[in-house]
Image (tube, rainbow, N blue to C red; front, side):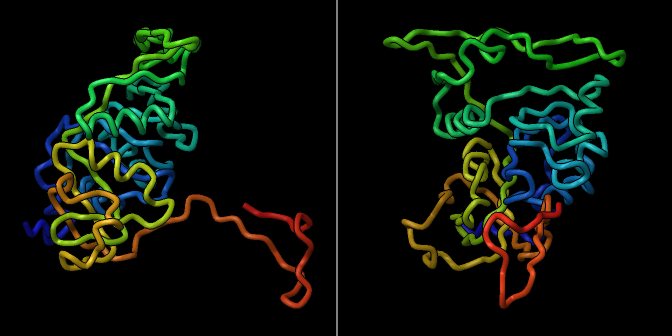
Length: 265
């Protein structure tokens, strides 16, 4: 039952070329950076990633993009990654765009054994009707597009059929974990992490703090250990801020009125 491994390198050592990875995180919040860096050093390539936004430029999953290791990404938002846009438009990367809520539910469905579900999201758009560019060629011509999806009417509303997502490996980051793999995520870092962990055949969790079994109250567990196969302790280091925004204050004694302070990105 002790699922702790000695290092991030050991935790991802068996990830093969062509593997599908479900990766937690939103922007740079809750991203398993230690596992991603270890995977970069390990050398696996032709990967398919399922994540909200596939990293930010050369950070998080972006390091694998820059190294040419990702063949396809299934994501919701790709606007914050210039390298992804370049690879996509030059025919070097396949991109399957999925609405954010649908992406979350597709992962949850995969983790709970539900093959598909109906949702109103995307009805009347290219999400349902097909035609979203999936792959370009080197000249910038569209060579593959998304397929039309089944639309069914329930009551007085149409719904589109979305299929579940599963992965070979799940990479997640938690604030606290125990030796049995039970995980607790901190505030917004919870985001896609439990879903990515549920949907994978083998889930690897990097944790900031390791505790003994029984120290996490059952009602506090966000992802039960039944979904987690490996745990590696990485500490709190390595977390990054995507965009740091500050605002100058006139003085501590006489702060500016709300709404009058300038902001700097």
